[in-house]
Length: 272
Image (cartoon, rainbow, N blue to C red; front, side):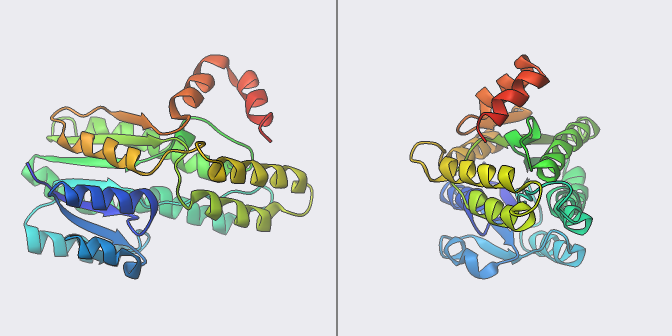
């Protein structure tokens, strides 16, 4: 059955690939992002583009209202908007850390709250939250990013229980290393924050390791593996609560779970 789908963060990477994949499968897709001009290929493929900054409630409300007016329902919400803030805790201003939470957690929550009444009245729907393997593990200089993704994990689990008898599924996607802009967005600002001062040596090592991971052939998975996982969750009558996919996603969580903190600490630090 074809679905009416809202996906945020659709101007690039995982969001764009997922939107295009779902359109190709025949779904009605509304792609939302701040950069509408980056989504013309989605429109040309038969999708709809919505200007939406997930930190702006008026834009969220307008987007959801447009979908209800034009389609009468929203079957699936894919909360994909987010970014990575890296740098030493001591170096990153709290204002920037709050912005990270505003986008990665509170923005996700705001879109969900806008969509939920419509799904609840229909007693049907799927909410798919893009978390990260980073919501299960940790790395140096990533305290604020990991904090938001750990929060998304717990938030989603609680929401799943709240909606259990409402006919609404809550699914978490945990990408591993995916070939997107994430690496570029990560390491340049990180060096701006911590490239000088007491954490400079660590910042340079993490930046070099990040570049190696995202630029070395075969070290990351294409965004299509996430799009495929999301597609499976949408088509399933009983989706998994979590889909852990992409390069190193399962091994990293296994190491974190079974090795213990101190051994995992050493394993992580050998990479930087």
